Amino acid sequence: MLRISPLRLLGFQRFCKVSPLEPSGPRQYCLDPLSFREDACNQRVFFTTPIFYVNAAPHIGHLYSVLLADALYRHRRLRVPSAAATRFSTGTDEHGLKIQQAATTAGLTPAELCNRVSAQFQQLFREAGIASTDFIRTTETRHRQAVQHFWEVLKARDLLYKGLYEGWYCPSDECFLPEAKITRQPGPSGDDGPVSLESGHPVSWTKEENYIFRLSQFREPLRRWLRGDPQAITPEPFHHAVLQWLEEELPDLSVSRRSSHLHWGIPVPGDDSQTIYVWLDALVNYLTVIGYPGAEFKSWWPATSHIIGKDILKFHAIYWPALLLGAGMSPPHRIYVHSHWTVCGQKMSKSLGNVVDPRTCLDRYTVDGFRYFLLRQGVPNWDCDYYDEKVVKLLDSELADALGGLLNRCTANRINPSGTYPAFCSACFPSEPGLVGPSVRAQAEDYALVSAMSSLPTQVSDHYDNFQIYKALEAVSICVRLTNGFVQRHAPWKLNWESPVDAPWLGTILHVALECLRVFGTLLQPVTPTLADKLLSRLGVSATERNLGELYFLPRFYGHSSPFEGRRLGPETGLLFPRLDQSRAWLVKAHRT
Ligand code: MSP
Image (cartoon, rainbow, N blue to C red; front, side, top):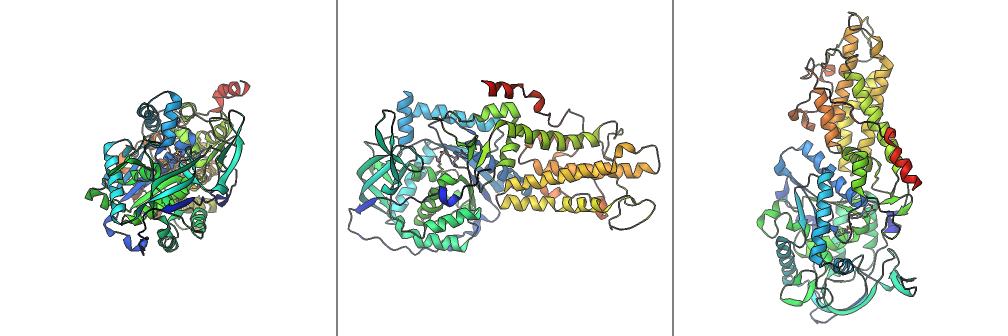
């Protein structure tokens, strides 16, 4: 795993010279961000992904961003099943110089490029089982209306002024850069040209009259917000990084471009000679999808959790909250930040030719297999490296062998000929450890398993709340290992159903193991929905018994009745997850070519 400090990667870009054209000095805004917490939002939660640029086809990094949000959304639906309480949006970011230029290079109109690539994202997300409740395209009318309304509100609050902007602009990154962030590098023609120090993308000198947002006024309110809500940006190192940036001066921000230069965007209301800056346009998508400026949006804002990559932290943790405060709204409830995927140790890029196509991966490893891999291996705090062998190894060991093997062991006809959820015998496994008696068979480690399993759902929920989904999966995987150890230790295959001494204990071993499997199936639903469905169906768990509210582990051990005891198992539908290494031929071939 590559450990890169977020602070190093997120060098804060200070901006260039801005000279106000209007003499009216800035009005001071003493906003208290925490006072904006509307209670209207009560139980509602709204998850968002970044909206994806349509200049190129989706890669595994994009899929990872959207999968994290999908898993959070699905986990929340397991806690609060009502569809009316949770929303999840994703979409495509279709305006700006980057798209305008990509369309020219591809010999297409911007609209043609947007339609083509947006469709690719939508298809990928459908194939990957993304359960979003809205897909927004910034070229939609509802979005233009929302952006223009938002602009008018800022204008009415005297937060926009006309000024002369002078500095470097990087179209690929759609951002302004100070001189200190520029270097020179040979371009395609061999001549040295100015590029962004961080991304290596070309920059050009811009000097034009633009609308400027009074960002500088929001430094203090932003600091108060972050100090008052230490989890606002999670994980913590990113929260810390933003507070560090706010130690520095925060210059005003240019929020429009000359339309003669940038025509592919939303015009500034009342001034067609200017186009709204693509980041202001893009960020407002989070309001468009909840019905802004209609009254409906107030029941979803600020109960919003943004899931974003670390490269766009500054836009979400500084510009966006400042714009919201400026428009009289609260900052979002949470900003969950993740790191990046590299490929065989290198940054993924078209020019290096190492971009990993997510659709190929979904085909090779199955949808659930690849979802599990990305979420189990992706660590928000650090970059993660991708290579094919790693996927095969992980899926074979955790899904095929450990989980699939466990299910197979407990349901196979040989060991469970009645095809039922056998009875639990309290005399064999008393709730109090250390008891001795002729029927007692449970050992100290078995009590450790029950204890680990009983706390697993809460542990998993805590990891979701802290945006550590990989830890939730790790906790499940540890318990799968413990359960396999339990079965191995008691070797039920050596016991005999015909023996009155063996039978109650044999039934108890299987009952406990099936209970563990039921918990695993329930907890894996947000990450591997199809595989979890197969597992729960095999156990005979009905659709109404799959929520977290229903998840009582081993009630018989605690002296309660179990709705599963004696129930028929569901039909046998083959291996839960077939091993991949038997079909490694393609891997070997891929490496030879
Ligand atoms: N359009 C902007 C976001 C606007 S949100 C109002 C954008 N788009 S993007 O397509 O470039 O990136 C979308 C997301 O993909 C970001 O969260 C980014 O961090 C993520 N990823 C891009 N490359 C990635 C990896 N190599 N690995 C993981 N995620 C990466 O930025």
